[in-house]
Amino acid sequence: MKTIEPMARSGISPTRATAVSAVAAEGLACQRGGHIVVPPLSFEVRAGSALILRGPNGAGKTTLLRTIAGFLPPAAGRVRVSSPKGDASVEGHLHYIGHTNGIKPRLSVIENVSFWQRYYGGGGDPEAAEAALDAFDLLDLADYRAAHLSQGQTRRLGLARLLAARRAIWLLDEPSVSLDAASTRRLETAIADHLASGGIAIVSTHLDLSVGEAAILELSRAQVLQ
Amino acid sequence: MNAFLALIERDLRLALRQGSAIGTALGFYLIAVSIIPLGLGPDLALLSRIAPGILWISFLLSAVLSVDALFQEDRDDGSLDALAIGPLPSELIAASKSLSHWLTTCLPLIIITPLAGLLLNIELDAVPKMVASLTAGTIGISFVAGAGAALTLGLRRGALLLPLLILPLFAPFLIFGVGAMADAPGAFVQSILFLLALSLFSIAAMPFAAALALRLSLE
Image (cartoon, rainbow over all chains, first blue to last red; front, side, top):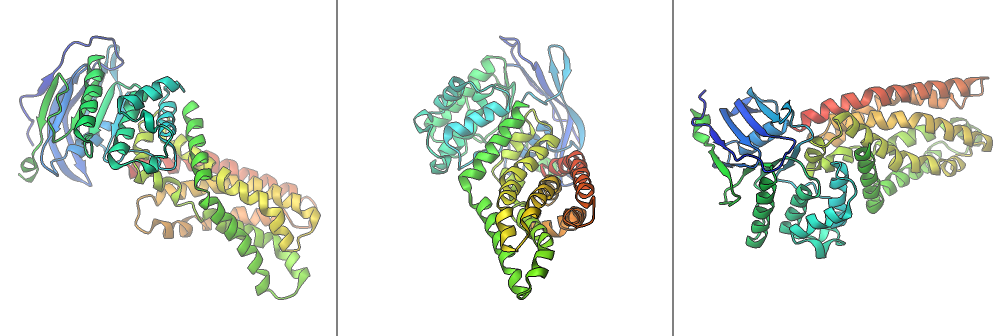
């Protein structure tokens, strides 16, 4: 067991007061099915900055994200979330977009976004829902059944809930999968805007996302096999 | 509360859009109720005597038919992850799913029960009693079924295991449900009170069991 040094520490002071001022891993080791997948590591992501997770297949990017989200219990260490008022919990501040999109094919595009907006407590503001669709270029498809969307459009619809309901921490697992170049730029813009307003993003990706203030954490499979 | 209502509303809308789940349950119920008399022979008195039991058993079998899909779809399409990090604790997610199951499966079955009773030569004045006993009992049925669906979530062949797991738990509901139709004085009121107690217990306890299973299934 070794701690990855130097700590991937980055951050700019938040331009706007937000609910969460930093997400940090303290000696966090991640397990899946009883096997250590990610050896203990420490990092801190401050409000307004992003952490990009890189690594080959099986390096534990998804496991790390799911551990931060609280779906998996950590094998060691902990995830610390701090707010301007002191320690906080990830609960209520989190968006998680995994490999699947959480989209119901039998609902229309706008119904899908509106549901997540209402569920996350964003009120029923139709303008915010439409703005979220517009940001991912789906507004002209608003009344289509989600079943009729292409793979990439479904992915964008999944991502649109990031904007429909504002939450401070975005955990994105390979968000650019099945996106074309233009849509990837829209995703970059969304992440950059989120960071600029004091948000936090932890993103696993193989692409060079240019999202402003970002540190890179390399996970490697070799560490696990040692 | 808003999130709870939003989830119920979405599930009702999905059930109405799809329709096949409701249709399958209703069809199964009517078919079961109409072929059982064929196996009994032409004894009308016997038929109306055992009609409440036939209705209850057919109802329970129809109600568990689509239960395995209760959380499965949400898990497969990633909605369950996104629901879990939302404002609702897992207990309330489970409760909302059970309530949706009652509204989309049990309620339509209760509504066609008078028709099904007609097929079994049930006495007319027994129909309101039958509907009352089903209403009192099946809310608990939906909550037990919800916990069963959460427990078998993610298991291969979970859909086959599920009835084995939950049908035995329906035994007390069945006993008091049929007991409500007995001729003895006071049987109806006492049985309805027992059914209500069973339902209240299920509503209070089952979401916790379901929530534990849901949290494990996220790993």
